Every structure is written in C-alpha cells, then in structure tokens.
Image 1 (cartoon, helix red, strand yellow):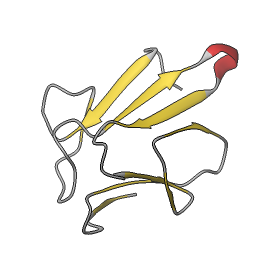
Image 2 (cartoon, rainbow, N blue to C red):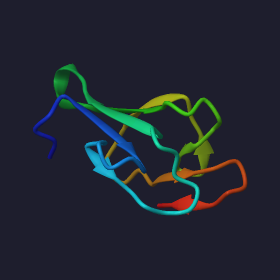
Image 3 (cartoon, rainbow, N blue to C red):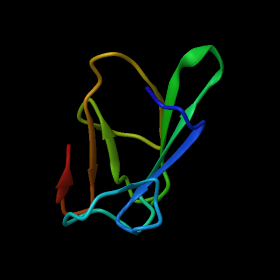
Length: 79
C-alpha cells in the first residue's frame, strides 16, 4: 500500500524507489494514487520502458494481479 500519492522509480539514488539493474533509467516510471484508491503507472522514459501484462504502455491503471516490467529498448530490466 502506498502512503505517498506519487512514487518515482529509477536508478538514481534520489528516486523514491531506486533500482540498480541493467535497463533501468535514472528516471524510469512514476506510480500515482488516483481517486478511488486506484494506482496508475506512467512510463516517463518515453521509450516503451514500462510493460504491463506483456504490453508496452505509456500509462495505465493497475489492477490486482497485473505484472509490471521495467526495461530498456533491448529488453533488459526487472519484473
């Protein structure tokens, strides 16, 4: 459960969630708490670096059971 309304994800240490892995950009994704308690994820790389349920996304509301993958254009990253 998120306490913050905005959570930034990337490889930089100053990100709310810092992931040190191949394929993760300095500023990679953003997770926001929307009205109604839903979570939305954004690809802030602009390079199809966020995939949900094996589909590249720009932004999408997340649902229970969704599988999120952060990756670079070569497919390196983390799930």
